[in-house]
Image (cartoon, rainbow, N blue to C red; front, top):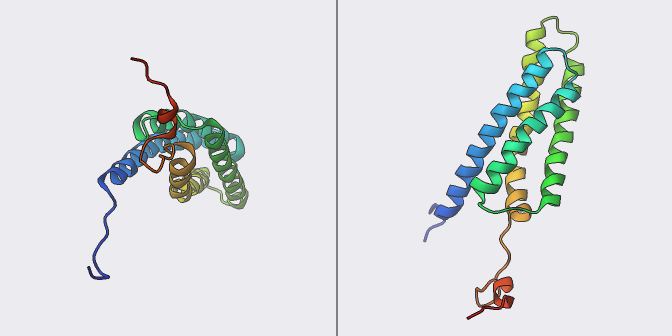
Length: 158
């Protein structure tokens, strides 16, 4: 095997990535529309971010739980990750909103601040995938014989 041979991830990982991406696209569209509309109508960037976060967080969790990973995740790590994302986006959009104040065009301001919101989540996309996969929706570790320790302790009735 040469050093130039491509190593392809297993089909399951590609499917997981595709499902996560599709779920994120749905949540992003909902969230981005909510943000742009709020900001366009004069809502402060931080408030628009919170409204948009909530609008996108609900479908994102439902889709990730049911469609992407197919199981319920741990609620506390999920909450910490998405709230951390929201805080990051709130800081970025607030700073961007402050920086674009000298611009006369409200439409251009909306595009720039909405773009900063989208860019924040684009950057966090991979980070969140890794954290969701490793912490929130991680499968329980199997024992040395490949049997799930919980299943091994579960009595079977006959």
